[in-house]
Length: 377
Ligand code: ACO
Image (cartoon, rainbow, N blue to C red; front, top):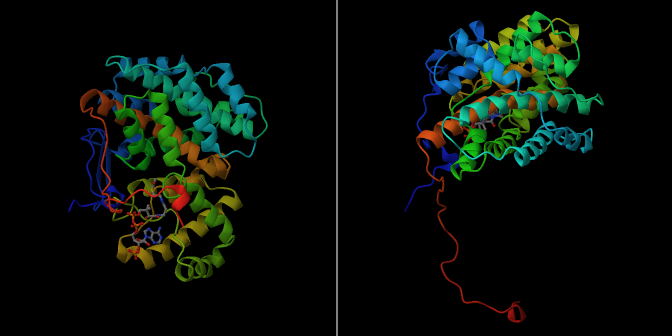
C-alpha cells in the first residue's frame, strides 16, 4: 500500500538555492548568508536582489532594484476603490486577497524568463501600497501611495502613518521585512507553488499564498500569540493562565512549536532582541514581561518535546512598538513574504517546472450498485 505523509512532513517538492534551514541547530541562511548578518547589515532591497538574482547586489544593481520599485508603487485606482468598498472591520488578509485578485485583472502577464523578475519587483512595490492602505482604510483614513525615499521600509511606514518614522522604527521594520522574507516551503509557499505549477499568473499565486498564510497555525500565529499576552493582562497572571489554558484545557501555546525547528527559532531570537530595544512605553514593557515569563514556562513544559518559541512569538511586540494594531500583524508578515513566494515560484517555473498533482489514496467502497432516488430509504 502507498504511504501517506500526513501534513506532507519530510516531503521534498523542489530543490532550492534560496533558503537553508537546519532545524536541529537553529540555523537559517538566505543564499548561504546567515540571517543575523543580513538583518544587522542589509537593507530589505539588498535581500530582494539576493532572493531574486542569487547574490547580494553591487551599488549599480541595488540602484536598479530601487528604481524599479520606486516607479511601481502605483496601483490602478479601481483597486483602491474596491478596497474602500470593503467593511472597516474586514480581516486585513481578506482585504489583501481582494486587492491582489483585483490586480490580477490588470496584470495577467504570461510567464517569461527575462521578464519574471522585473514583474516580481513591481509586485513587491504594489504589496507595500496595498498593505499601507489596508491600515489606512480600516482606520478611516484617505488612501495614500508610497513615495520613493531612502528605503522600502521608510516609504512604507510614511505612507501608512502619514508621519516621519524614527530611524529606530525604520530599522526595526527593515529587520522584520528581512526576518519574514522566506522560510523554504511552509503552507503558504506551497500553495503559491501549486498555483504556479498550473502556469497561473503571479498575482493569482499571491492570492493562493495569502489564503494559506491567514490561518492561526501559520501566519496568523503572531496575532494569536500577542492576543494571549493581552488576555493574560499582567505578568503575575502568567503561571495561572498557562495552567488553566495550556495544561488543563490543552490549548496550544501560540508562537511556540515548528514543523522544522526542533530548537529555538533563530528568527525568534532576533525579534526578541528588537522587542527588548523597542518596548519603551509602560504598556509595551508589561507585554514584553508577560511574553518573557510565558516563554520560560513554555520552555520548561515543552522543551523536552523540542517545542520552543517560533518567529511569531515576539514579532508582534516589535510591530506593536512601531505603532501597528494587532489586526495588521499577519499582513505585515505577508508584505515581507511576498518576496519569498515570488522567489520560489520563479525558481520553480523557470528551472524545475512540472504540474503539481499529487494523489489521494482511495479508501471508500470500491463499487456500489446505483439506487434511483425513488428507491432510497
Ligand atoms: N503548544 C502545545 N503543544 C504543541 C504545540 C504548541 N504550540 N505545538 C506542537 N505541540 C504538540 C502537539 O500537541 C503534539 O503533541 P502530541 O504528540 O502529544 O499530540 C505534538 O506537539 C506535535 O504536534 P503537531 O501539530 O503534529 O506538529 P506540527 O509539526 O504539525 O506543528 C505547528 C507545527 C502547527 C506550528 C504547531 O507547533 C503549532 O500548532 N504551533 C502553534 C501555532 C504557531 O505558533 N504557528 C506558527 C508556526 S511558525 C510560522 O508559521 C511562521
